[in-house]
Image (cartoon, rainbow, N blue to C red; front, side, top):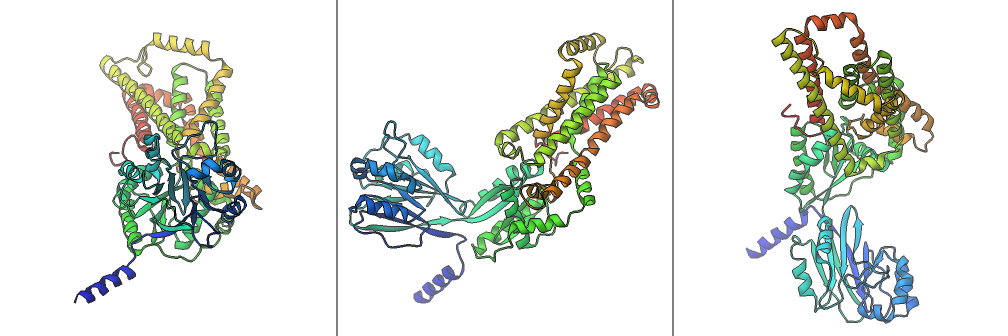
Length: 549
């Protein structure tokens, strides 16, 4: 009965995979002859060889993925050799020896294979005196850690690295026996590829709030790779995955694995489908999939299906942009409040719109991709949205104050968004002294540039990334540039419509007369507009949840 049970248990282990694979690392040291060729992913040379320096150099050259962890004897007797041959290896690692003025040794080395990061340490002294806090901080992001030590220092090393979880840390003891060899398996977790745009608030919400708690439940079995598809290489990978799984409903956020995909923007549906995908991925384990067609060919094929009408429609829909709207509403109302001429307001508004158009064109050409990928970009974007929202709420409060004042006193004298006439004169005088007509135009240009660069907008997930990819050095480059200009021109139409509606509305005698006859209604309606735009900004930037709205 016991034999039958063991047979069944073995069958289960063989036919139901654990959800992870592993690759081999070969350690070797004290060589008297070159090591045999091995199909391993990484080789770690522990030094101490009895070979001549020429032979050792040839061994280092024979593999592009070798890390050199010299012994104390090598450092004492062959320091010149180590310095001369450090370019032949991924790195020369000594974690507890700091030679002044020497850049030969690294205290640790990070090696990445198939998106999994391995951190390698090499301790030679019996009682290593090193900055342990710094070393342990480096291990936080690593998927696996390899610590090489001696029989004397390994108990201390085990104690120092004891905080790391499970089998994340593997210890290797140096062996003095000739032609020492040892293989170590480094486990790889199943992968989820999360494709998103760094400029998309929905993407950021799902990436930062929905994904982490779900993945944390399976952190020992799943690793999430976040890829911003505004970068060409990442967009190419995403298109390959879409082709492999035949994704029909393309969204601004997509998640793929070897077991399936999720293409969904609704928070609850996304969370439910993602957990389903994670479970399927863990249960099925890693498996070989047929390679999809080359991503670049797929992108060319997608681009050839575009027509000017499709590009115009995509630009028009993407142009419904709350931050740019809020800025121009605020700017025009401020200039009206301070009594600037119709001509001045038109100049400033059109200059601001032109700056937005040029900035978006430059973004489309990929000039600010690196900046937008930085975490400081996300912070600055959220702060900008918060400032704009608070200013609009101030305007809303002043407008409501005007309505209450009129209802109470029955007159509109001295009432302009709640600012007393004396305040208005002082602010206007300050602006006149600080800003000439030329300076106001410069301020409009800078505002348009900064707002466009920092604001978060979910651009057309098919159209704009594809055009940006093709607009680089490809045979369709000039056609793509034309589409990019067309896309941005129609992207500007909603912004210009909002500006001209406010501008002409403020000049319309009929509207002005209506507003004067219905002051309370007009003020409350204006306050409602300011509050609506403010909530839209706070929701899109993640300061408040859309579920509350």
